Amino acid sequence: NEKSVGFIGLGNMGSRMANNLIKNGYKVAIHDINCNVMKMFSDMGVPTKETPFEVAEASDVVITMLPSSSHVLDVYTGPNGLLRCANPMRPQLLMDSSTIDPQTSRKVSVAVSNCILKEKKDHWEKPVMLDAPVSGGVLAAEAGTLTFMVWFLTFLRITFHLRFISSVSSVWIYFVGFKVARLETRDPILGESMVGGSEDAYLAAKPLFLSMGKNAIYCGGAGTGSAAKICNNLALAVSMLGVSEAFVLGQSLGISAGTLTKVLNTSSARCWSSDSYNPVPGVMEGVPASRNYTGGFASKLMAKDLNLAATSAKEVGLQCPLTYQAQEIYTELCKDGHESKDFSCVFRHYYSGQDE
Ligand code: NAD
Image 1 (cartoon, protein in one colour):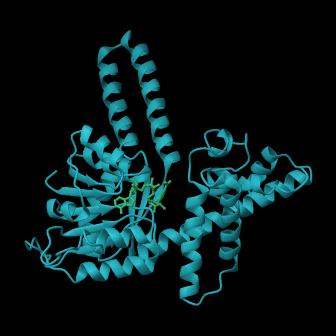
Image 2 (tube, helix red, strand yellow):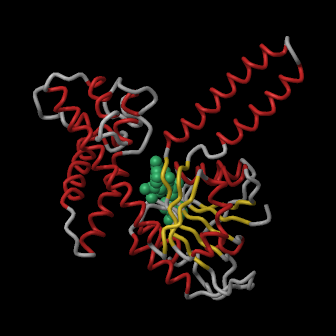
Image 3 (cartoon, rainbow, N blue to C red):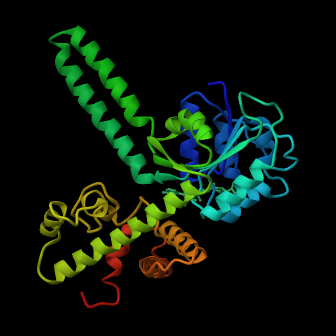
């Protein structure tokens, strides 16, 4: 691929996104304040840069994947930030995939739109900014790997069996199996990107999104990608609480978790928290609840996203009582020492302080 992509913030999510870009042929240069991360990529032969500004100097596109709004502001507008001496600057497109508040996304977008391009390319006179947070997480990575393994094993079994019947069939199955395995493993970590900013920029960036993840949804002007992300996670936090509360009450009233799962999943309460990410240990295989809530999406990240939702609600003068309640519960969960456990461990939280 022709485009040079600069990547800043290579933690749990960013490192996998950058790796997917590399696998898809993009020329990637990276920067992270963590020396171990820099060394890991440098050992892989990926160019590393000392500052965000140096990344901007070397890249047509820059993607950031940072913990929070303050980190994003620092990386864009700080003394050695992407926009230092921004007039004129090289990157045509800057994309922030961090989960942050829509207000900060808009602020950064305005700062970017005040710059001009070093070389005017195509129809773009100015650099453009997209806020493009992502869904997905470590479980998605595991699901991708598992799917790959299932396909690989099936392929081995079928090939072995057919080898005695027809070598042409086994070559054909090898080919199909390989294609499918490639498709399934191309996006091991990312689910959907929710994108805010100019629609032209979104369309131009679509190959990048599809190289990193499964899908991208255009949400509207600057800040709407961030808004979509925090609204999704707010709804998820509340649905997980609702499902957990129903299971706790159900079990106390004598219904087994397995039976109640069947009821919910064939009735009107069915949702992702009940049918794909069930919070009760032992009910579903492969979910964090069945491995002591390890992996998945950390409670501290859910608490962070609820804080963003609560702050945004206050800023627009909206009463969101469930948001505040969920924010309180997840904050408490973190204080109780479960901040690194998957957010579905909120189920267990119902039993703390109660007679089981
Ligand atoms: P992380 O903490 O694992 O990674 C963040 C990386 O940014 C680290 O490597 C850190 O060293 C680097 N960093 C911090 N400040 C920096 C700076 N000033 N300059 C350069 N690098 C800097 O976080 P993560 O789990 O990868 O999450 C990143 C974002 O994605 C967060 O906003 C999070 O809410 C969101 N998110 C996470 C998940 C998940 O499951 N982990 C899922 C969806 C969205």
